Length: 405
Ligand code: ARG
Image (cartoon, rainbow, N blue to C red):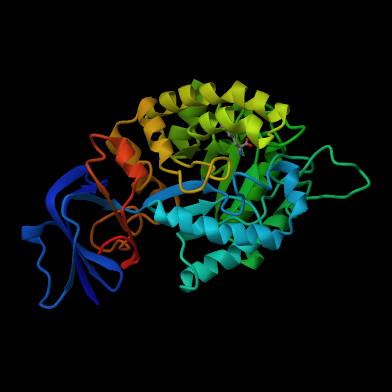
């Protein structure tokens, strides 16, 4: 099946070029040619989608979502009021919102095994949603942010599925996640904002434990995403061989240098601070978390600026669920306020994450051999990055999922 999509403009993040009067030729869901209309010859009888005064670009990628977490209910320990099945149902609804917002690929970094079914149902065309890379339950030590919960009564056991202590026990948890079919491993090497009884600057897990987690995942060909706010925990994660650092909030020069030297990707969620500070009280977020957000939000944005200036591989990862799903592109504006050009921000949401996922040349691109994941917006995102907050056309694997009539 051959399809020709045309529009007034096409942004190619790979070449950092804008093509005027552009066309993309698609065969069986894969791009076979793109460029100025005059250079792309469509075979006789190819179906055409003429978008006119719009800008086409590759579908966006968010490297840090939690589709099973809604932003309004089931937050914190409130989630104990709901079965995991309910979270899976939320994920189905949130997957559609995310895709409609122009995110054709997202990495779901930690949650339930139910997300594996959501991923598979999307892949088999049963429900709409982005292409998902799913971590399953976070792996981590007792009482650690993301893997476990603190301060619940000792006689009501609530140990997270991925909790273990010591290198071998943690390796076993990694193996268990892989056995059920996860795409990557998530762990947390420092405390976090939205957990009780954890400290942002305090490392979690020994270096030996972190290395065991990363090594075990790498043996099996999986990448590892490590949540880290504090500087020491970030350095530990890089030293252990993490592929991506999530949040990467408190970066000093040495941490940035280490990330650059090791090619470690930094997935920095610099939008959600605004949302939390504005809505926190209404949402009933505990004061412990509000205080940690106030402590880290602006610091993280300055870290972002420094990392971008130093040439680190910084990418879009929003932590959707903290704020409403579908608003993912709002982070792009903040990224341009803290040191990125619009083209850099677009690359950070396309070609850079594709590389971090090990899918360069397949995702986040508009050249021959790429999945036909395309979005279109009216206006020019290079002049106004916020045009990407209103996506009117979405195609995934050559199928139109929004707009296009
Ligand atoms: N999931 C993260 C945590 O609980 C969110 C951090 C959000 N705040 C921020 N400034 N990035 O730690």
